[in-house]
Image 1 (cartoon, rainbow, N blue to C red):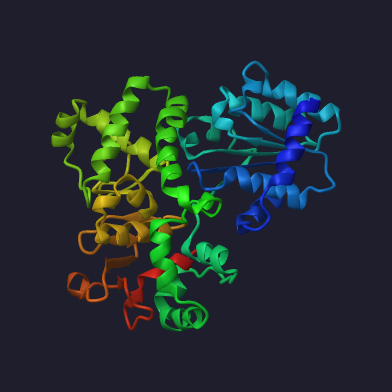
Image 2 (spheres, rainbow, N blue to C red):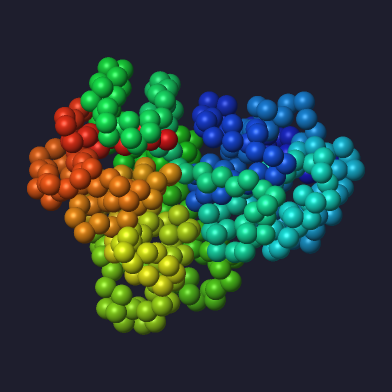
Amino acid sequence: MNLFFELSERLIEQAPSSIIREQVDYLSGGGRMIGIKGARGVGKSTLLLQFAKQKLKNSRKLYISLDDILFAHRGLADFADEFVKLGGEYLLIDEVHSYSGWARELKNIYDRYPGLHVLFTGSSILQLSDGLNELSRRAVIYDLPGLSLREYIHFQTGIRFEPVPLEQILENHGSLAKTIWKEIRPLQYFNEYLRAGYYPYYFEHPQTYDLRLKESVIKVIESDLLITSGMNPGNMEKIKQLLYIISHSVPFKPNIDKLAGRMQIGRNTLKTYFRYLDIAGITRSLFSEKKGNSLLTKPEKVYLHHPNIMYSLNPADVNIGTVRESFLLSQLANGHTLHYPGTGDFLVDRKYLIEVGGKNKTDTQIKGQKNAWLASDGIETGIANRIPLWLFGFLY
């Protein structure tokens, strides 16, 4: 146990203090068991360590990662028991998806030790297991997205703007944009952010960001997805093949029959692969409101999770129109429901219709539609129903 305490204290002490996301406050008041899930690279581990460093200075705490070889033959519940007997108050558990039976053991820990606080992180692919349902009455689970444009600007400049609800952006975008561009040139940071900065590790070493992002995507498929889905390793090559097709087809509107034949797999298997890539935080699928989005529903359009992945996987052939749509989708997906409409690009919360384009884009496609808006790239300030695209980066 002494080794675990030593490793824990070292990692907590080394946690960066210069870039701390506001979501660290999630961990302060959510009850005895709090979970954070999200795509690989969004900063879950760092958030956990920063919370320990900032908020638990005078508490008996221990940080562990379940992908550590030390847990290959060690039970989590027994470990928690030993920690409690040593006066433990806060057990911070990273990478729970790497540990078989993690949900059952967390449930046992919660029930057996009412004085112990447990905070854990896991990949977004925890949704593939029944674990979250098993913990639903005990744990508060938060989704951690990558950095918004607002957060990126904060960490680049030190200037902090407040997040703005969607309704305020739609109704007051003129005054909001003016307030922001009085202090910064938003288009400068917006164009930077499209290429790099969604994943916080960008700030550690910007020069290797593209390479690390590409490696992270592959690791999600070959490691995280393989562990959680229980699929045969051979299927991972098919999923990588699908990802290659998506990243080299813009925009991607899947023809299921043709694509299944090309990949030599069944239709339903292909639809399952689409869902896996979505849950893993590599892609985002857009479904028709009328058809729903069940496991076997065909997506109408498929985007990479964020423009950063587009520039990382296929930098020589990036389509600016798809970049714009991917950006808006990535910002709106945190807190809003989106569907593929018959007219326009996105139906948001079944209420707002948004068409995306450049500064010369007209509203022809949405003319006459109720609650319809243009999200325009290349402008600092909008007018009427034309809103600067970058402003949607201030939603969270």
